[in-house]
Image (tube, rainbow, N blue to C red; front, side, top):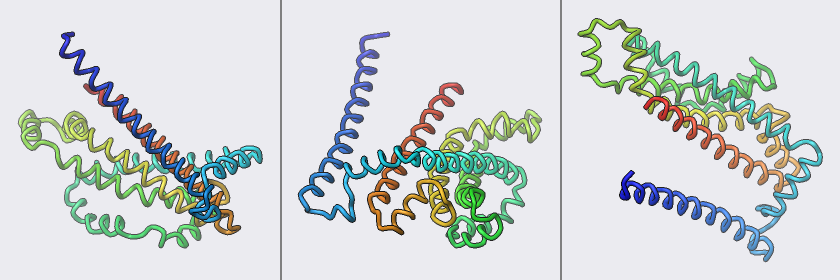
Length: 263
Protein backbone atom coordinates (compact mmCIF):
# COMPACT_ATOMS: atom_id res chain seq x y z
CA UNK A 1 0.00 0.00 0.00
CA UNK A 2 1.39 3.36 -1.03
CA UNK A 3 1.80 6.30 1.34
CA UNK A 4 -0.99 8.16 -0.50
CA UNK A 5 -3.38 5.27 0.08
CA UNK A 6 -2.43 5.08 3.75
CA UNK A 7 -2.97 8.83 4.11
CA UNK A 8 -6.33 8.56 2.35
CA UNK A 9 -7.51 5.74 4.65
CA UNK A 10 -6.24 7.63 7.69
CA UNK A 11 -8.16 10.75 6.63
CA UNK A 12 -11.34 8.70 6.25
CA UNK A 13 -10.88 7.23 9.74
CA UNK A 14 -10.20 10.66 11.26
CA UNK A 15 -13.26 12.10 9.52
CA UNK A 16 -15.44 9.30 10.94
CA UNK A 17 -14.08 9.98 14.44
CA UNK A 18 -14.83 13.70 14.06
CA UNK A 19 -18.38 13.01 12.93
CA UNK A 20 -18.93 10.62 15.85
CA UNK A 21 -17.50 13.19 18.27
CA UNK A 22 -19.86 15.94 17.09
CA UNK A 23 -22.82 13.58 17.13
CA UNK A 24 -22.10 12.64 20.76
CA UNK A 25 -21.36 16.27 21.64
CA UNK A 26 -24.71 17.49 20.28
CA UNK A 27 -26.54 14.69 22.09
CA UNK A 28 -24.85 15.39 25.41
CA UNK A 29 -25.35 19.14 24.94
CA UNK A 30 -29.06 18.61 24.33
CA UNK A 31 -29.52 16.59 27.54
CA UNK A 32 -27.37 18.98 29.61
CA UNK A 33 -29.33 22.03 28.40
CA UNK A 34 -32.59 20.18 29.03
CA UNK A 35 -31.54 19.38 32.62
CA UNK A 36 -30.25 22.91 33.28
CA UNK A 37 -33.44 24.54 31.98
CA UNK A 38 -35.58 22.31 34.18
CA UNK A 39 -33.41 22.73 37.29
CA UNK A 40 -33.55 26.53 36.92
CA UNK A 41 -37.30 26.56 36.39
CA UNK A 42 -37.09 27.94 32.87
CA UNK A 43 -39.27 25.11 31.57
CA UNK A 44 -41.83 23.04 33.47
CA UNK A 45 -40.49 19.80 34.89
CA UNK A 46 -44.06 18.47 35.08
CA UNK A 47 -44.64 18.83 31.33
CA UNK A 48 -41.14 18.28 29.93
CA UNK A 49 -39.71 16.03 32.65
CA UNK A 50 -35.87 15.99 32.71
CA UNK A 51 -33.01 13.55 31.97
CA UNK A 52 -32.50 12.84 35.68
CA UNK A 53 -36.19 12.08 36.18
CA UNK A 54 -36.21 9.85 33.11
CA UNK A 55 -33.27 7.89 34.51
CA UNK A 56 -35.12 7.51 37.82
CA UNK A 57 -38.21 6.31 35.95
CA UNK A 58 -36.17 3.68 34.08
CA UNK A 59 -34.60 2.51 37.35
CA UNK A 60 -38.07 2.23 38.92
CA UNK A 61 -39.32 0.23 35.93
CA UNK A 62 -36.35 -2.12 36.24
CA UNK A 63 -36.86 -2.52 39.99
CA UNK A 64 -40.56 -3.28 39.41
CA UNK A 65 -39.60 -5.87 36.76
CA UNK A 66 -41.53 -3.94 34.09
CA UNK A 67 -38.78 -2.46 31.95
CA UNK A 68 -37.52 -5.46 30.02
CA UNK A 69 -40.96 -6.98 29.43
CA UNK A 70 -42.22 -3.78 27.79
CA UNK A 71 -39.08 -3.31 25.68
CA UNK A 72 -39.08 -7.00 24.70
CA UNK A 73 -42.76 -6.85 23.71
CA UNK A 74 -42.24 -3.88 21.41
CA UNK A 75 -39.08 -5.33 19.86
CA UNK A 76 -40.79 -8.69 19.25
CA UNK A 77 -43.73 -7.02 17.53
CA UNK A 78 -41.43 -4.85 15.39
CA UNK A 79 -39.25 -7.77 14.29
CA UNK A 80 -42.22 -10.03 13.46
CA UNK A 81 -43.98 -7.33 11.44
CA UNK A 82 -40.71 -6.35 9.73
CA UNK A 83 -39.88 -9.91 8.66
CA UNK A 84 -43.43 -10.54 7.47
CA UNK A 85 -43.57 -7.23 5.61
CA UNK A 86 -40.24 -7.71 3.83
CA UNK A 87 -40.97 -11.35 2.95
CA UNK A 88 -44.48 -10.73 1.63
CA UNK A 89 -43.39 -7.49 -0.04
CA UNK A 90 -40.58 -9.27 -1.87
CA UNK A 91 -42.85 -12.11 -3.04
CA UNK A 92 -45.65 -9.79 -4.19
CA UNK A 93 -43.14 -7.49 -5.95
CA UNK A 94 -41.85 -10.50 -7.92
CA UNK A 95 -45.42 -11.46 -8.87
CA UNK A 96 -46.17 -7.92 -10.04
CA UNK A 97 -42.92 -7.76 -12.01
CA UNK A 98 -43.60 -11.03 -13.79
CA UNK A 99 -47.23 -10.14 -14.54
CA UNK A 100 -47.14 -6.53 -15.71
CA UNK A 101 -50.86 -6.48 -16.50
CA UNK A 102 -51.66 -7.45 -12.90
CA UNK A 103 -49.34 -4.65 -11.72
CA UNK A 104 -51.24 -2.12 -13.84
CA UNK A 105 -54.57 -3.38 -12.51
CA UNK A 106 -53.45 -3.18 -8.88
CA UNK A 107 -51.49 0.09 -9.18
CA UNK A 108 -54.34 2.47 -8.15
CA UNK A 109 -55.29 0.18 -5.28
CA UNK A 110 -51.73 0.04 -3.96
CA UNK A 111 -51.55 3.83 -4.16
CA UNK A 112 -54.87 4.15 -2.35
CA UNK A 113 -53.85 1.72 0.40
CA UNK A 114 -50.50 3.46 0.80
CA UNK A 115 -52.23 6.83 1.24
CA UNK A 116 -54.93 5.54 3.58
CA UNK A 117 -54.30 6.38 7.27
CA UNK A 118 -53.98 2.91 8.76
CA UNK A 119 -55.14 4.05 12.18
CA UNK A 120 -58.60 4.45 10.61
CA UNK A 121 -58.64 0.69 10.19
CA UNK A 122 -57.86 0.21 13.89
CA UNK A 123 -61.43 -0.56 15.05
CA UNK A 124 -61.90 -3.05 12.21
CA UNK A 125 -58.57 -4.74 12.98
CA UNK A 126 -59.51 -5.06 16.66
CA UNK A 127 -62.89 -6.59 15.81
CA UNK A 128 -61.32 -9.14 13.43
CA UNK A 129 -58.13 -10.04 15.30
CA UNK A 130 -59.04 -9.12 18.87
CA UNK A 131 -57.39 -6.79 21.39
CA UNK A 132 -54.06 -8.60 21.46
CA UNK A 133 -50.60 -8.77 19.92
CA UNK A 134 -52.05 -10.00 16.62
CA UNK A 135 -53.80 -6.68 16.06
CA UNK A 136 -50.58 -4.78 16.76
CA UNK A 137 -48.64 -6.88 14.24
CA UNK A 138 -51.40 -6.56 11.62
CA UNK A 139 -51.43 -2.79 12.06
CA UNK A 140 -47.65 -2.62 11.58
CA UNK A 141 -47.83 -5.02 8.64
CA UNK A 142 -50.43 -2.86 6.88
CA UNK A 143 -48.11 0.13 7.22
CA UNK A 144 -44.84 -1.47 6.07
CA UNK A 145 -46.13 -3.98 3.48
CA UNK A 146 -47.36 -1.55 0.81
CA UNK A 147 -44.19 0.54 1.07
CA UNK A 148 -42.05 -2.60 0.72
CA UNK A 149 -44.00 -3.77 -2.33
CA UNK A 150 -43.79 -0.43 -4.12
CA UNK A 151 -40.10 0.12 -3.31
CA UNK A 152 -38.91 -3.35 -4.34
CA UNK A 153 -41.12 -3.44 -7.43
CA UNK A 154 -39.81 -0.06 -8.62
CA UNK A 155 -36.29 -1.37 -8.02
CA UNK A 156 -37.01 -4.32 -10.32
CA UNK A 157 -38.27 -1.93 -13.00
CA UNK A 158 -34.97 -0.03 -12.94
CA UNK A 159 -33.06 -3.06 -14.27
CA UNK A 160 -30.89 -2.12 -17.23
CA UNK A 161 -32.80 -2.72 -20.49
CA UNK A 162 -29.68 -3.64 -22.45
CA UNK A 163 -28.85 -6.39 -19.96
CA UNK A 164 -32.40 -7.66 -20.18
CA UNK A 165 -32.13 -7.82 -23.97
CA UNK A 166 -28.80 -9.64 -23.62
CA UNK A 167 -30.45 -12.30 -21.46
CA UNK A 168 -33.28 -12.60 -23.99
CA UNK A 169 -30.84 -13.13 -26.86
CA UNK A 170 -29.23 -15.89 -24.83
CA UNK A 171 -32.68 -17.52 -24.45
CA UNK A 172 -32.66 -17.20 -20.67
CA UNK A 173 -35.93 -18.11 -19.00
CA UNK A 174 -37.93 -15.62 -16.94
CA UNK A 175 -36.82 -17.37 -13.76
CA UNK A 176 -33.13 -17.25 -14.77
CA UNK A 177 -33.43 -13.57 -15.69
CA UNK A 178 -35.11 -12.81 -12.38
CA UNK A 179 -32.61 -14.71 -10.22
CA UNK A 180 -29.41 -13.86 -12.11
CA UNK A 181 -30.13 -10.29 -13.24
CA UNK A 182 -33.19 -8.50 -11.88
CA UNK A 183 -32.77 -9.30 -8.19
CA UNK A 184 -28.97 -8.81 -8.07
CA UNK A 185 -29.39 -5.48 -9.90
CA UNK A 186 -31.88 -4.36 -7.25
CA UNK A 187 -29.88 -5.13 -4.11
CA UNK A 188 -29.47 -1.44 -3.23
CA UNK A 189 -33.19 -0.84 -3.59
CA UNK A 190 -34.05 -3.97 -1.60
CA UNK A 191 -31.78 -2.87 1.24
CA UNK A 192 -33.30 0.62 1.07
CA UNK A 193 -36.69 -1.04 1.49
CA UNK A 194 -35.33 -2.69 4.66
CA UNK A 195 -34.59 0.75 6.10
CA UNK A 196 -38.07 2.00 5.25
CA UNK A 197 -39.74 -1.17 6.49
CA UNK A 198 -38.02 -1.17 9.90
CA UNK A 199 -39.02 2.45 10.48
CA UNK A 200 -42.59 1.84 9.29
CA UNK A 201 -42.81 -1.30 11.44
CA UNK A 202 -41.88 0.65 14.56
CA UNK A 203 -44.45 3.35 13.74
CA UNK A 204 -47.12 0.71 13.12
CA UNK A 205 -46.34 -1.19 16.33
CA UNK A 206 -46.59 1.96 18.45
CA UNK A 207 -49.87 2.91 16.78
CA UNK A 208 -51.17 -0.58 17.48
CA UNK A 209 -50.02 -0.46 21.10
CA UNK A 210 -51.77 2.89 21.51
CA UNK A 211 -55.02 1.18 20.50
CA UNK A 212 -55.03 -2.27 22.07
CA UNK A 213 -51.86 -3.32 23.86
CA UNK A 214 -51.48 -3.97 27.57
CA UNK A 215 -47.71 -4.22 27.24
CA UNK A 216 -45.01 -2.46 25.27
CA UNK A 217 -43.55 1.03 25.10
CA UNK A 218 -46.65 2.39 23.36
CA UNK A 219 -48.71 1.15 26.29
CA UNK A 220 -46.36 2.89 28.75
CA UNK A 221 -46.84 6.18 26.92
CA UNK A 222 -50.64 5.84 26.88
CA UNK A 223 -50.71 4.78 30.54
CA UNK A 224 -48.45 7.69 31.50
CA UNK A 225 -50.79 10.11 29.72
CA UNK A 226 -53.86 8.66 31.45
CA UNK A 227 -52.40 9.05 34.96
CA UNK A 228 -50.63 12.34 34.13
CA UNK A 229 -47.23 10.74 34.70
CA UNK A 230 -45.37 12.69 32.04
CA UNK A 231 -42.04 11.32 33.27
CA UNK A 232 -43.26 7.94 32.01
CA UNK A 233 -44.40 9.49 28.72
CA UNK A 234 -41.01 11.13 28.09
CA UNK A 235 -39.25 7.91 29.11
CA UNK A 236 -41.24 6.02 26.49
CA UNK A 237 -40.36 8.59 23.84
CA UNK A 238 -36.65 8.41 24.67
CA UNK A 239 -36.74 4.60 24.62
CA UNK A 240 -38.39 4.68 21.19
CA UNK A 241 -35.68 7.01 19.90
CA UNK A 242 -32.97 4.66 21.20
CA UNK A 243 -34.65 1.58 19.74
CA UNK A 244 -35.19 3.21 16.34
CA UNK A 245 -31.51 4.20 16.23
CA UNK A 246 -30.33 0.70 17.17
CA UNK A 247 -32.60 -0.96 14.61
CA UNK A 248 -31.45 1.44 11.88
CA UNK A 249 -27.81 0.74 12.74
CA UNK A 250 -28.43 -3.01 12.55
CA UNK A 251 -29.82 -2.55 9.03
CA UNK A 252 -26.74 -0.50 8.10
CA UNK A 253 -24.48 -3.31 9.38
CA UNK A 254 -26.52 -5.85 7.41
CA UNK A 255 -26.23 -3.65 4.32
CA UNK A 256 -22.43 -3.45 4.59
CA UNK A 257 -22.07 -7.20 5.08
CA UNK A 258 -24.34 -8.01 2.15
CA UNK A 259 -22.57 -5.61 -0.17
CA UNK A 260 -19.19 -6.89 0.97
CA UNK A 261 -20.32 -10.47 0.33
CA UNK A 262 -21.70 -9.57 -3.09
CA UNK A 263 -18.59 -7.71 -4.12
